[in-house]
Image (cartoon, rainbow, N blue to C red):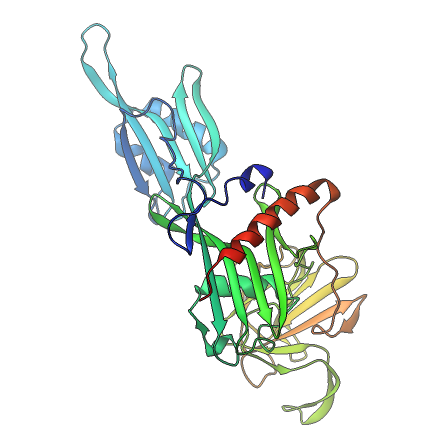
Length: 408
């Protein structure tokens, strides 16, 4: 979070669990002076190209080619993914002599690049000018309190939390608390989160936790969201130490651990004792499997020896990981690719020598097997001294909001 953002966070509305950061910001027309133009919004369909879309407006061949050259200079590829939002701003030229209007011309064009950015082109005295603009959202601050009513999260939370919040909580605290075995009846969550919407529609992902308090078995854990750079945030404890590690704790959302790391284990298929140099996570067939850290794919495909379909990742000079028995690989995944922490690389299956659907996961440190459940990974980063005061201000404000959140 930047220092400019912090002052926007804490105005209250009448609702105890819904607050506005400021009066909602509504984006103006994306370009100045276009209010009187005809605005056409389109969403691309399968098979659409920029040429086919620009041909719908009766532009002259010369004007159409001028626009296509300008757009394709910055927006690579003639094909568009289905659902891409586009805006055309059209005007009519008026003769200074007769006052009559002529054919429509295109004055401005806009593509919604992703959730955060849009690409815009506008015709001016110096030709067609390109700009990359940030999407504007209405942001509402909300809070929630929930208590575990069963023996685990599967037993239910009261009141229920949005599934996205539950998933984010598990990711935020996953090196502090094992959500699969350490969550118990009576544990509580207290959250402060933002919900983003644009033009009245929620965007995905529209929810982000800003601060969280977890009471687990009598011990409190806190998480504070903080951005060192705009758009690049992380979660920190109250002392400014990152809760994230270079690795995710687990490469998937799983139902149970069916087999742990062991130097000798009875193999139910081969009917003999063999080493088991990894952890088996039981999960439904097709469950996404994520890279636990940044790295390079060294192998992706079928592996002899019972592993079935695997992905191997080299993370640095020390660590590498293996993901085995996959149903399939992520689309386009191949050896030599660079992947990021959390990126989907494959899907749970039962390829190779298995007794059912699960992920077999291995970690190597200095080319030696290590137990994935007991490995010590240092914090990803800490708050630098020059940012400490800004972080402390954000922490103070967030904790005040959590304290003001009413009990469920």
